[in-house]
Length: 533
Image (cartoon, rainbow, N blue to C red; front, side, top):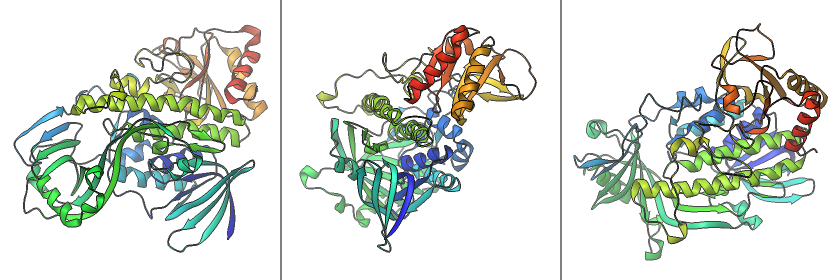
């Protein structure tokens, strides 16, 4: 059996695993990814990726490629109810373009949502992660692993040939789905409402041609004697989601090819529709969060860490944001810039966000579909879209804030402000794409000098920028804030500064200069952030 060595082993090659591989390679970390299926998903599943997730893809250099892969044809943002896809009897559960095409998130982000299906996005992530050097092994299963004092010892099995490979990794990311074998192996339980319903995801090929008429939607809830469930239309394919009752003896095995054809025809409202069955994927609508997201050198991400109802498409987005939070921390520890203590913050930060988002997904399902929730779900206040996507916070205090009125406080997301760097327009999002960023006011020269010394001394990827109000020569450590928005967005004076993490969250802030102590103060802030104090 061959022996191999890598920094991070990722179990699972769906959206979260591929995103983790991409983010880690952007930080120069060696990655081996093992996915038991031979290829990426053929099911559309998640219908879109929110603007916060697109910020992370922007920072990783793939935003344009992701948008070029979509959009999801023949769909819009609305949730439609209909007797069938071709029936004149229909109405909106949630109208299309509720925000208005002109609104978007331009006040809070350089990005907007992207509407495309999971089966379209995954190949994009796979291609770019591979191009950066990630070792992506599809058709390969994590057979076993042991977490030792010096790292993870794992056995990978090629499912086609049976060949086994021993891999030693510093860390393991479990992105192996809602029924995570790794989570079970670690004995980590889950808390929450639990399973709400059992669903068969049916994929068929059926060209509706002109039969849809002017109907354009993201999801259509169909209700007729032959079909009751959700339908998505993607080009010449239909994705049907039908519930079944194991307590009544029903099972996924009952969805034979013949049954899938019948269901597709009933959903379409066209008895003679030509239908080609493609696949059936059983899954559960569940609301639960793992009791811990880390155990030793193993970290849970995505559905392995949290599962939530599909309303709002929050599950995949939360998982991708898990990967971004974890990737920079693993990279900084592996590169020697941070102590392993930094990794303890992954569970501390992401588990409360997961719980908040699960609750919001439950509340969204209630709002959109009138879904009945178990009493243990409790009363949950539905947050507005902008706050939920951009306003969650890390650390003590309120779990979220209104990103339209950013506090600039440590633990909050760094506000988006358009700036100029070397004569080109950039967002603050573009600044932290390369690592830690210190942003200081016009009078914050002492902070800039301190950051420069720390970066040189420790080899730390810490880039300082000083704000200016007017034109400056190219190549200077200045960014131009023509609209003079940064001081208010970060709540600093002209002599203050903020330290922004590589995932776009504020790590530290000084509202004004510390005089001759700037160096010591910033050095202490960096050490506390990186766990090296």
